[in-house]
Image (cartoon, rainbow, N blue to C red; front, side, top):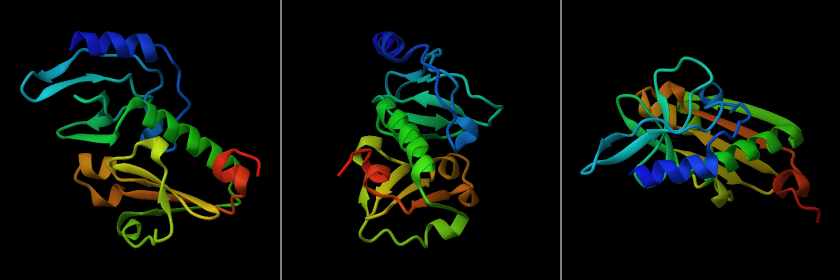
Length: 171
C-alpha cells in the first residue's frame, strides 16, 4: 500500500489542477492522503484536497481508479490519467464548441448516443465522454451514485465542433 502512495506522490504530487466543470471544481492539487480501508477490501487514499466543502472526498481506489467517496465509493475514471484527460477535454471542448447544452436528472437518461463512440483516453467508469461527428458529450453520474441522488446526474453536450475541436488535430 505504501508503495502506491509513494508512486502517486512521485508521479502526481504537487501538480496544480484547473477547476473541473463539475464536482465543485475537484481537487485543487494532487497530494496523497492517509490510506484507508483494509487488505481484504483494498486500500484507498485521498487524491488531494477539494476546492470547496463537499460531502465526499476525491480518492484513489484499490486498483488506481480516481473517484469519490462518502458513505459509498464510486470510481469516476479507471485511472488518474483518465481524470486528467477528462479535465483537459472539458477545457478544450468549452473553448471550441459553438453550442453548449447541459441536461440534468432524468433528462440524462433520454440522451440519444447512437452513433457516438466512447473517448477511451478518459477511461470513464461512472463519468464518461462520447464523441460524435461534430459533438462531444460528457456524462457525469458519479455524484448521483455516491450520494444516491439521481437528480445530480448531469450531461454536457458540446456541439458545432470541427476537426480541431474534436481532436486537436488539423485535417
